[in-house]
Image 1 (cartoon, rainbow, N blue to C red):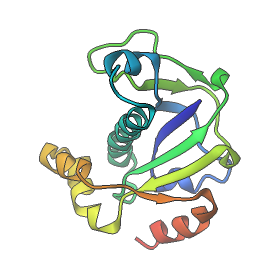
Image 2 (image 1 turned 180 degrees about the horizontal axis):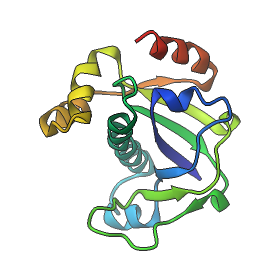
Image 3 (image 1 turned 180 degrees about the vertical axis):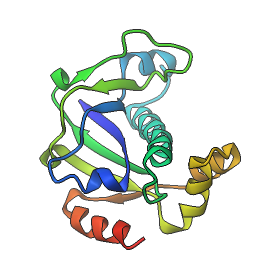
Length: 156
């Protein structure tokens, strides 16, 4: 299953990979909610949900204010669908119950540096800044660029 994992710069520094957390995916619930959408469109919805969740993680740990989404292919047994979809739960939500090794990561999606001000404001609770951040495209990085990305994020 392809997961879109919300992350922070601190997560990228974990050499073991990504720890269990709530993630986003193309789920049966999402397909039911958007039956006219193709797979590419559904994947975009899941990725953008993870980008929004990344802002919450940044607010919690004070990381570099750039949204990060880690795309990884994991065994279905590593993922649990939410038991009850509440009003606050997106139809993309799944729970990752096992760590994800970097070898399972297929891509990294990260804000460009120009987004830092909006992402920082969004992490501080500014809804308008969150909307502006959501309008920005995330840059795509191959997993082979992980070390370069770590250095870039550490530099600020």
